[in-house]
Length: 207
Length: 207
Image (tube, rainbow over all chains, first blue to last red; front, side):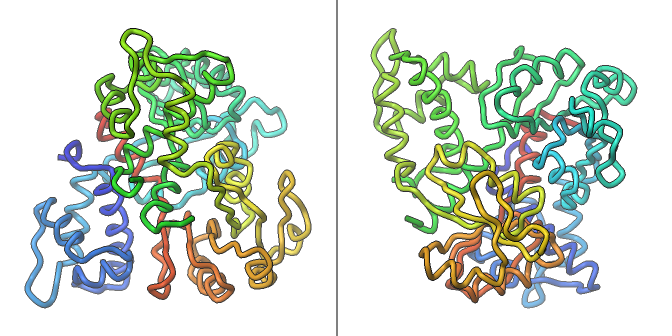
């Protein structure tokens, strides 16, 4: 089912989930589509449409059962299946992503970081060690982790991409603002922060 | 027109643009939809569809004129209209975004950073000064900049959101993984990195 959902629907569902976690912690049982829409500045009919799409039903006047809607979203978006990844590049962005609290809530676990800077190798970001990039092949083999989050500077991104695919990485979430070349069995997802901002400008007519 | 384009289309257009800039620098005049599709691991018909959508035509066998397609994308996505923004929070993520080379290519200019940490205030990230958050109101007034990129830790995000909207910020690109509350005339765009990753997992069936 996840495959049939658009990126914007997935985005909204993850945001509903953030609210539902919050309500769940506060032991609030029900939430209305109106509350969700107000918190997220989106249309109430959109919320209803999304919730209907994942086969969850609300009760007249009281709204959706928080625990049920939360679980439905977890199921549909596979949050309970933990996916482990390595961060390649322990610069500002790599460190920021390694500390990003939301990832683990949604089933993404950063296992370790890799860099070539000797001053960084052997140090930790929270409980995550920074390893020498030369160790990646061994770590891929030991752990079976084959997802990499690439956060190196642009100018070395292609070279590092070649290295990490040789080391056994199969999936690359690429934050370097460049187009990477790799063999067709390697799957690359180019993160596009500026695309997101341009969409914001378009919707709000920011000039 | 920009308003009618989906986020995924905008994402792809920004990626085509990255390739076109590269080709333009190398003085290559033409590019085919097949080349673009190979570089981006997407379907060739998708490329043709997108290009047709922005009213650009290719020539049989030689492809699209690089300069023309590049300019069309610039026009449609308003890259030439520079939008200035302040980064709020000079932590790892704030610094990473301030250094992100792609933003300026696409018309987003980070004017300065703001933080409350006395050790950071007065220092620079490249040529961008880190100011005391208490100075924001004055800086908004002086510069007319009303876009903020919020990168503070989660626990202070709401409080900082209240402060910056009081200081005159109207548009917030929020990277803090929390739902912010603000008056209805304040426009908030919640960046959702995990939503992007989940989409990657869905498309590539990553388990």
